[in-house]
Image 1 (cartoon, rainbow, N blue to C red):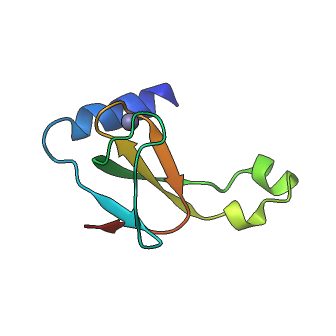
Image 2: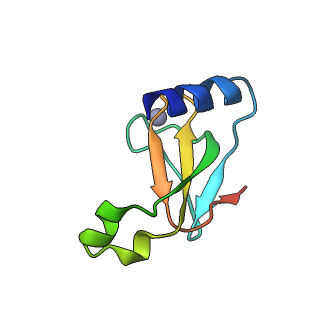
Length: 82
Ligand SMILES: [Zn+2]
């Protein structure tokens, strides 16, 4: 997992980050308050999720990775680029 995120960070390093909005609200990093993110996605379909009754999680999640601190915000909704 760490390797995956390191790869994402390396791949997106630079001035490619953008502002995003989810449900009409601009996304702000819950750790550092940054507003620039890079995007990624992850499949949430795991046996563990199903056992916990989280069948709604058996879908793609959108990841917004804070450009400043690397914190990852997870969304089941598709972030809108603004
Ligand atoms: Zn941050």
